[in-house]
Image (cartoon, rainbow, N blue to C red):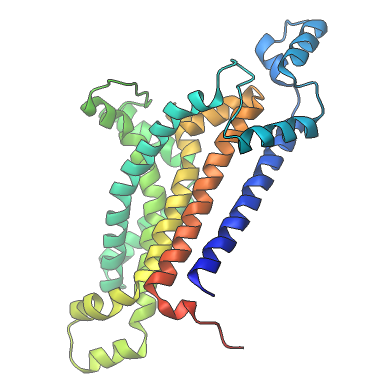
Length: 319
């Protein structure tokens, strides 16, 4: 399969996936109890007042009519208007998206090189104390849910040691040192989660190659273990490692939702949770599509980079 055909096919599947996600989000909010009018007016509102606001917002129309109208607006490049505060969805998302990108970028800059280095060290020193220590730490981190790691780090670094703030509220014009301090615990939480996955999979990829015949031949020639890793195993491990890194970055972008909520970080994940609580469907659809788009694009990027780094994958498989 040619690279162009693969990209076109994956883009088409990605568009269908995004369409399905938007439909699932619409149906999901529709079956939840209450609606945006009740969320805005509160429990003391009378049924007539709630009905009037529902007519004003247009949420009394059938779901399929609202969905088709939203699709038409999306084709024109419009994300619609928030039902909760009547602000354009694009304006609500712009600042939050920048904060989420900042958090994900800082995490990737810290976690990716550190995880790849530790995975390589664990493979080189297989079954030694450093490999066993890294394996125990990695498995423990993978076994714990994101929110538990976040609360654990908060107790240690914010409550006990008091070196980082427990909440990560940032604002425009904030000093760089204060911004980095506020981002420390979210970056550490996400870094531990995705870094442990990348370290374990990098170690597995290197060890798998070390059992290859050409590696055995290199050993028989008397090459040192470091030379075998650097000159023979590592170049052939580029393809699986690239897949590991890109797929974990996709998980990182989607996983920020939980971390942002725990640390009250003003990002896109926090906006999504707030919009769900208010039944603000246009904001929920827009946030969900952004997260899904990033996931689809990163998966496509992983496939393309794997094909570019390993030409054998472009050959048709034999029956």
